Image: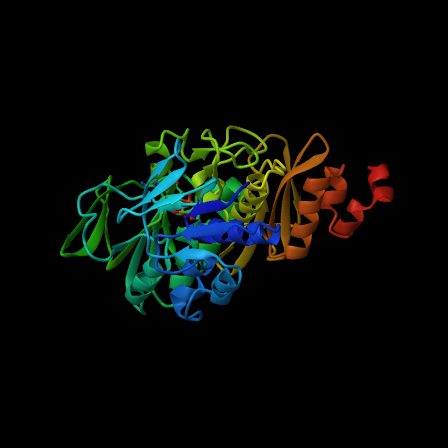
Length: 411
Ligand code: NAD
């Protein structure tokens, strides 16, 4: 009988798992342990409203009252320093020990850093926590100069926010396009144009050599010798799964804790979910999905598996972003095999959907400013709906009707 579940990491995945365990009727102890001083809060606003101040505090994932009413032992500002998988124990920083029947690793990920000269100067930031967002916010004012290193999701979202606040923004991207990891080349290129139109300066194929300044950063120097003045620098060059605890406990890791499609790791009784988990995906080796929605799905799957009724859930990456005033939603790998079918055009400012179609089925989709079409595309993926290029492209043809069985037979 399961009497004690310990969850390390009190962020989105940890809190979601705790809620799912209670929702499924588990009545034993739940110890939810987090390093941050706050219980789980919403991170998507950290690069948007929380940075401009339109959102005073990031919303909490669960009300403070919920933890009390659900009888959760919540430890904030608390570090676990090791896991003893043989004896099913976790050890805390100050010597306490907790026994577990099931353990969930939901430790998330850390921002990658640049190990170059000047990295320790004041004014150079990463963005992961609410504290990071608060500190960065104080450095962004009218007429200030922000250099963003890395043109991925954080870089482009912060650029969007900062340019609106009257900051001079430059993005330095090492690759030959922005946002390649999540949006692929066509949408990445369109986002670059949109950001440039809003006033953001963008330099592709650019490596940073070092930072200049005395005490505080003054400039970013590129490998080709260019020098870009900056009073604030944001390093947003990706994240690394926070899997140190698992690795030192001998649990199999490969850029994250390697788990099966129920979240079970190589160590009996130990599970992982969220950014720290290298989870089976629809194609390719298991990997950390690094998205909000996948973290929630994984946490719910793990809760079920911990209680003995596992329902394996191979993940399809799904997320959203807001860049240069556009809401972009994506599901699946848009750069995979097959053809890209456009419903709409990048050129006319109207809503647009890109579908990746392979073997008559939608395998991935990106929707720009059209949440309704995105939800239909998501259902097409889930249902493996047969589709034709002509119908997908035809904006006069209602997309929803393609889901109907009578239309499907015509395809
Ligand atoms: P990212 O992977 O989205 O982008 C990193 C970018 O940095 C890439 O374009 C990469 O080519 C570039 N890069 C890498 N090394 C570089 C270097 N040395 N110099 C210049 N460019 C370099 O990662 P991120 O934007 O840092 O975001 C971190 C994490 O936060 C990710 O897990 C991301 O999914 C998550 N996040 C998600 C959202 C969202 O879903 N909307 C928003 C913000 C953050």
